Length: 479
Image (cartoon, rainbow, N blue to C red; front, side):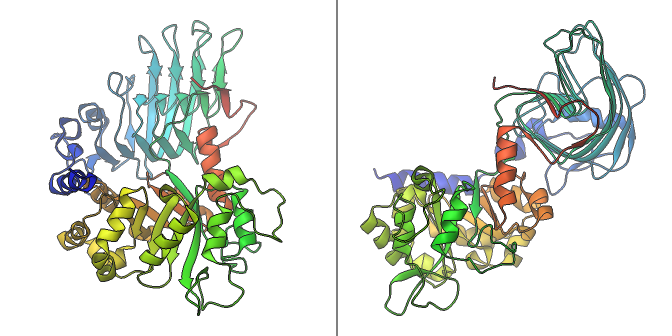
């Protein structure tokens, strides 16, 4: 039996059945209004309703009003880490008072898991640790993956002298394997231990970062890092710009591809001209072969050989010619992404050819307006999925303008077995709003995109604001 025969039933099964998240008891909380999905999150208006999160720790939640946590707060999710999404909706949780007692992980949440998200929230209150405390932070004692985004904390933390010396205390999270992203800590941490332990304004101690919120790939758009910013197209589709972009170590280099007058594939977005570099030159560059006359300053062939290429076709139906060139130079298929302007009917007519390449490792991406339309995507229509199914590809990525991918649509695509790539994040606000949404890929012209990736992946903190002498992270470890 062929690989294709095995893979196609699996693909159809993904489309035919709802995701496990949609039917799991861990996402269903009848006591709350809503369905626990991105489209219809459970709505929280009281402290008692906030406690309901423990009954469905994989669901979506949204605060509808400011909450006052009267009395002593017991941290959520002590047994099962929170793996859903809590959208604070810009509201504030006040008067959070925690006396650690027997809890070893102290915060609004005891634990947030690999897929957990807390965002757009303000928290104020007090935490006092005890001899049982191992980790403490305003949002989570332990951030075991996941992400905390756009959260402002005004929580004072008093570290009791009886607290173990190896306990980790952070303004946002005590111990973190996730990402704290554009958060602010306005509280005070007072450590009575002598000597003090791992204390950080954002995170007490970090381990190996494993957040599913991070994109798997960051693509350098043609013209990446141009001198006048994202609107500067002067370096688009040039060998010199590709060499410069490689210094930022993107996961993918994007080039625009079309044939010139002689039928040779070149890289250009506009009408081809004699000076355009050939696609073969770029492929060989990414195999570590620097073209004659090119400045070798800073060029690392090993980085080049690890980088993928996205072929953004500017003419319909270049598949066969592109694949022939890949074969001729022996460029690995698992480092190639095919995307661009091919019409749906052309893809459908060539689905056997494309499927064979995908089975060899190639990624195939299509824009929503080539698959169907942005309107059909917005409606989450069966017609959109029917056209995907008709292609019979083992995997397919929807490559969309970022503004069209709401949380609801992203959830719907994921539930139907489709990855998401978004373009083009060309300013700080777009990167901030979209970088930690769990997409397969984000594309940008700005070095800020790779810098954000590197900070998140290495330190687990990016864009933080805090004051005082307490370091951002108490201890950077790798457990």
